[in-house]
Length: 482
Image: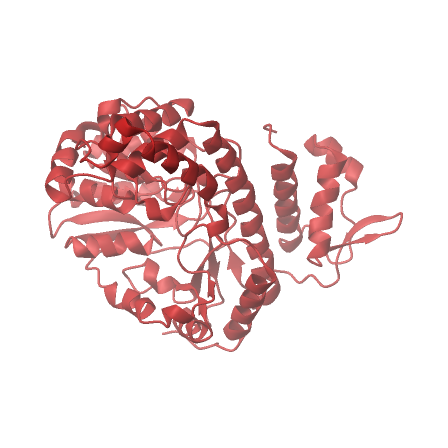
């Protein structure tokens, strides 16, 4: 087992034992492995095992018996916690999802008290004190202040690009400084990449389900989407993707390999290598959205697909929106062979990105504060996501399936087919609860019995009440789907 903090280990063990219980490995009232046995098998401390069991006990999943050990609670019902395999037909389709998002915009936004909709981290997790201190330092440095109030280079400030390159170097990925272009967030980076390699009317291969913001981006650019089947553990079905590449109509592939939104999967290194090889073989540009990789629940993020790229065909996009603060609007793209065209397009599109925020982030990245912040963020997100899974298991209808990500902070909840998530979303909004219905994540009208839940906010009694209420609304909304 890799070295992890005791916190990560007990969260991981609690998740594992919960999965075993709900998959039927341990029946209600049956005895669970002893603390000594788990310590020996998993090479962990007794405190780690005890903490995991205590956590499960607090959720009425296990119960302790004096001088006898831990047992599965009689309150537990059989429930598959993993989302089912999702199949779609990879047909190029027009995208007309903007009307669905308009429903969310028209919701009583000022009355939303409980947000499980937009995937942002809780304000309490934003390193406000660190950022405030760095902003003050920059403003009091006359040389930096003068540069901060001027236009940056088209590529972005070299100091920030250097800091980003050093972070990738720590993950074993060497990216030349001149290959990195600073953008106004990750979506801006993805937009630049798409505009460089496609034109209106072209078809782009995307995962299904896919982040609704990407589908809206494709729609705004006049592009068609070919939805590729995914698996919540393995990611993109590469055999199906190759069939589409072989037809010759795919002009780009837009994907996320690490903690994909909304399924949360992380592709294996073998699959990432194969994806790069397919892109090279069929000369299809690969556009990678790696925005959630820093939100890994382990001590080090997984490799991006770009790590395996030898020909410069992968454009790696990311930002600080999920790991630091969404309001900074700072992203980047490592453009490979497309870097020059990306920079030219950025220059004509929006000229430059805020120099002040670039200097602030560079100082933050190069300080010990960033690593401390990321470690704290990962612990919080792991715990929040686990608690959300527990709550969904407890309050949602029997037969509900839930993804089990190892990073990020979104969950894909697949309800039994007779439940209508569109109706649930509307009724939840009327009660000041914001969720995202599954139909937003497809261009083919699928996933109407699915919800995406954001776990970015710190867990509170009010949040648990909102999930319980959402579960009650779900129970009341059975309807046969056409």
